Image (cartoon, rainbow, N blue to C red; front, side, top):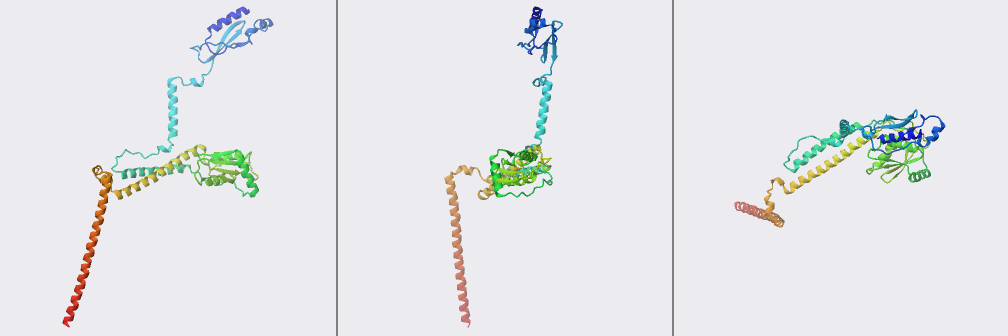
Length: 371
């Protein structure tokens, strides 16, 4: 019996084309002790490395023995995820879905807020700067309108009781807050519901928590401290530098049931608001640069006249030193002309004075002769 079983097992191993292990089920063996002793070497599962069958990609093959004869049982499995998009149609559907998701995300990108119009050819630099300045101001108004959607009505936050902290307690809380490593970061999203939630989770096991304000502007840490104290009910103990605030949870702290306040934005909406704020800041910076550039253009035109009215060949005729000498000569001639004119005026004025004095003396002589 054992010899027949071994021969059947060899034939089965030659016909199998799957890479899955062969599982020999022992529950269908006869219950006699002699059979267990004779076939004890074949009861253990055996793994044989074989090439994958082409017509049976996903499935298992089990070798079982029923009524003393070896048989094979096949069972199909679900294909793995990496083979899910094997067909061309499904691949196209997948790419279409990804493209739609990208487009939906890009609709809220502030860089798409542009003033549409055809390309223009500008006569001079003044027209070009004014056109860009006008477009930038229109985009600024659009961004301000978009930011109004993210304004949340302020409701009454948790009641902040005045905590009387002595100097020794404040010193102890400062040292304890600096030594401990628990902290809450404030990134580009600013203050939103997740920041307050993290603070309450830290206060569950610690009395203090550090709030680190990344990429904060000068003076913005004070605003963050006031806003966080109002929303969380904590006490700002110390402000370290321009980016770190230590908050104390207060005496008799009880964790609230709703740790994220209602009058705060979600993580997604806070991220969208930060993008619009960043775009508005860059647009205002561009407007300031354009206005300064326009002012410099007007100053240049006042000093050196409009460059469009100048003859371009006049620059090539004279060298820089000659042109400078030419301007100096013109200035000297204009000054000499003014001096000559002033001298002529002085002479005329003297002659008039002499004439008036002679006429007055003649009048006096005539009056004396008549007498």
